[in-house]
Amino acid sequence: MEIEKKILFIAEIGINHNGDMSIIKKLIDNSCEAKFHCVKFQKRDVNKVYSKEILDSPRESPWGKTTREQKIGLELTKEHYDEINDYCSNKKIDWFASAWDLNSLDFLDQYNLKYHKIASAMIVDQNFLKEVAKRKKHTFISTGMSTIENIDNAVNIFKDNNCSFELMHCVSTYPMNVEDANLRTIEDLKKRYKCKVGYSGHEAGLAVSYAAAMFGISSLERHITLDRSMYGSDQAASIELRGMRELTSVIDKMITAVGEVKTGNILEEEITIAKKLRAHINIK
Image 1 (cartoon, rainbow, N blue to C red):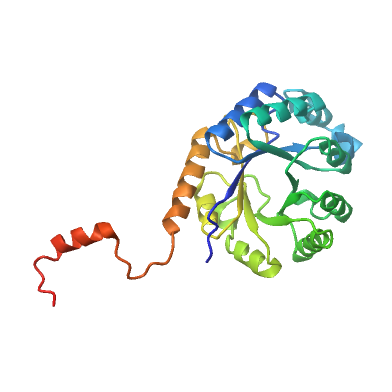
Image 2 (image 1 turned 90 degrees about the vertical axis):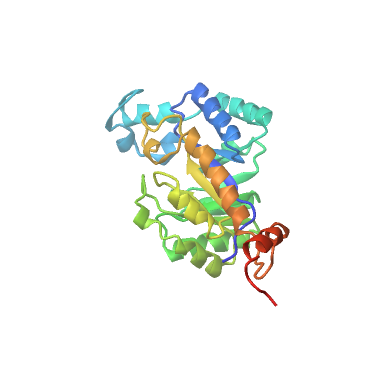
């Protein structure tokens, strides 16, 4: 099994900011402190993504009593994104967002973003995939809720448009049960599509992410939060600052420990120790 020497760590802020710029900045600060390479958001045109029936349905939230009020409360404005863009630039950390509709994709075009992301929900929209692929930016494609045919179609679209991409093994449950991780899928995706494969995790804790790193993933995305008890559907599957620090630090050590094959190679430091521990043995 080939292990990547460096994994791109992506901090998925998503909608865990609850529309609060002070929370956003703190999450960006935490991502920098924990040595993540990027932060990611989600961008939606609420009226395009959700039907009027859903938006008008009752839903208690900090913003009101309808789903419309909740969704609008979680959606960031251009002013928010302008501030995010400046803040990340000053912090020297990349940011990008997963668009959930064409209007949102067009919106993101105004920023000089390095990456695009296809959320698992969007992998079945071939017209959307073609529009993303036309942008020619490296794209992460999550495979949650997807059939082989869905993944085949997405890969073919990006190859046809000569747009670099990598797949991300993903299970779209929140939080994901450990027994559903099936990390061997990472190897199968690599073999089938001859591309890099990352892991987008929705589990509680860090163990599955550690295991994923040993399957040679090229990128690792985890939802992050200030406090898992905060309001929001993604908070329970997220990690706090302590977990973020542990994740990057431990995986870096794991990759270092994998090292190279050196069967029969004796370290210089071992020679002196060997002389002491084998002094009683008559070696000819």
